[in-house]
Length: 436
Image (tube, rainbow, N blue to C red; front, side):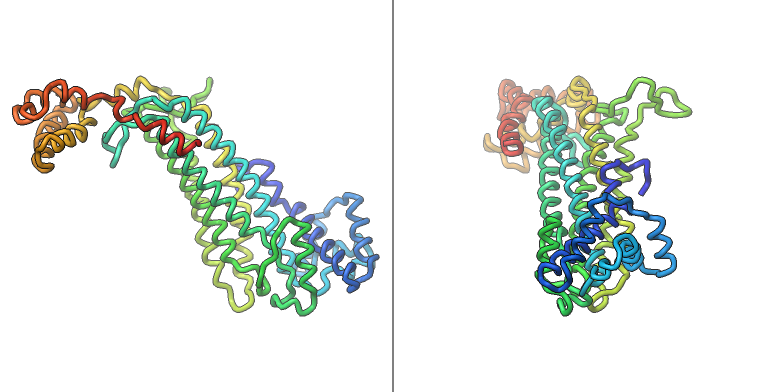
């Protein structure tokens, strides 16, 4: 985790003290249920909860010192708690294995991280929707292969982003439900030394579901799906970021990141206004996607469990969620303050002498009885003249002067095919589909 790209609420989930607090809650809830079942004395659970009610400080350095000797983090924690609670602490961890604590804790952390990310997505969706409504009918050029294609509106571009991030939110909600899973099933998942009722109780107390069948660990396909979902969200972030970067290029300049008073773009060139935020988001997206691969490789553990997944998850759990949280917040700010230039959009739209209307003429010729191949030939030969003139010539005027075209379509009919508003007649329908 790089502090530069971290926000406090998400970072707090992954702090050692926060992790140890979840560990204690799991152990205490399990002991409570064991007491209810008569397996351990009621005094054991009471001693744990009485100590917890004092809001104790978790002495992370002391636990770390024990781990340095014991070479086992959970045992180090249990020993430290026993020193604080007293003899009744010996009833903690009855019939449990370390992974019961570790895996259930990771589930809690990822679920809590998901809640922050879902809120981030809500903020982003609200910003995108506001700007989409603002530019619902702002004409701009649609591009395919980076080349002028046909007119769209800037609002439609943003509506596409909204729909994509709305899908991201649905995927993340599903991934949260899948990862929020508790396993308190013992050494190899058979419940040999602990009642399944304990697992059910702990899961209920922590807002988790029970893992239907575990080994020593919760199966890692769940985690693979979770981190893959984060990677998809990162891809969507990058898609919008790259679009903004392209629109800010000097030759295009249809939109650009907000440039604050006093901001400087280059140490060498005072004139520069660079898309640094969206470039940064592109880089962050690469990192988040990279975390998905080791999560996928964690699925194939040996037999009932090996520890090869553990070090991976200590990296990717915090790093992926913290980075994505930062990226979503940054993108929200970019969208919210994005500078949009309708006049430049209109200028670029007219840049190539009306070529963007070529399909309408093609269709009109075919509907008038000319074969599609011949109609294509007629339009293309005039369009290429405009292309080669770098937009200096007018496609409309060339078509009017083309005898073969003029024999089929009147000047008035041709002019109607160059009506910009024609392309936007279904914008309301699309917006209704996206925003309801």
